[in-house]
Amino acid sequence: MEKKLLVEDHIKRNKRLTVIVCTLMALLFMAVVLAFGFYFFGNIYIALIFAVPIALAYVTITYSISVQSILSAAKARPANPKIREEKLLIMRVEEMSIAAGLPMPKVYVQESDQINAFATGKNPKESVICTTTGALKLLNQEELEGVIAHEMSHIKNYDIRLATITIGVVGAIALISEIVFWSLLWGGRGRGRNDGNAIIMVLAILLIILAPIFARLTYLAISRRREYLADSTGAYLSRNPEGLAKALEKIKASVYNTKEKPKGSKTVAPLYIANPFKSMSAESAWSTHPPIDERIKRLRSM
Image 1 (tube, rainbow, N blue to C red):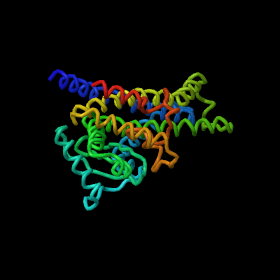
Image 2: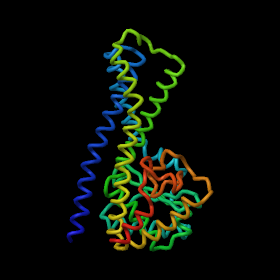
Image 3: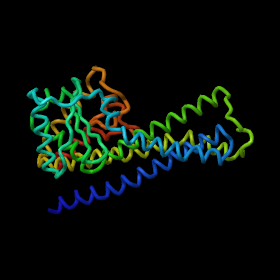
């Protein structure tokens, strides 16, 4: 009972943190667009008129098409109940959704020999769980249940909403920074740029350059913490930490020690249970995931 209350407290704190981080990301994006407008127009009022509607429109559009965009980037397809392995996957997802007290997510499959999975969606009512065909072939039912429980935890903890928004915002900030970088490199000048205040112009350029670093570090720090929480919540849902621990051992061998080229796009890499585009040696402060050996160790100490 005490453990259940502790998990529920973590989930409530996660939901509050999701709202705070999403708000900060939206404000940061608006500030970058404002700085971008000032850089090219040299007038703070024109930049303000330019920034607010563009930022709001981008966030709204990105959020509305986010799920389909992620599934398209991952080259995922709906699970086919006529295929035995995929029918068992659908059954496992249904079981875990009942255990979590959540609506049944849509189930998708990605054609890949690697063992991996991810969850996405705007909220639990509009959520998706996707696994690779490699996971269906190489994981036994206990291990697959552990992976599904982990992904169901991301849905229950509202990690999917945070990831959906931040992936789009961080990408947009990075794109704006790159445009300004190349403009500076090639000596480009925005209209009216010399008429603006020089100090404000320098601050605007610094904001544009440093914003993607700040946004990404913030997201990475939160992402790693949420992977640990999803592991522990998943173990609670499945009542079997060893199932996920064994699955992570196989994932480690499949994802980090294989020469197979990852499927899909790097855009959705942070969503996976293990980043398919990075090797074990790449696990660092810039990694979206905590060390997999540490995750296994924590699960086996539960």
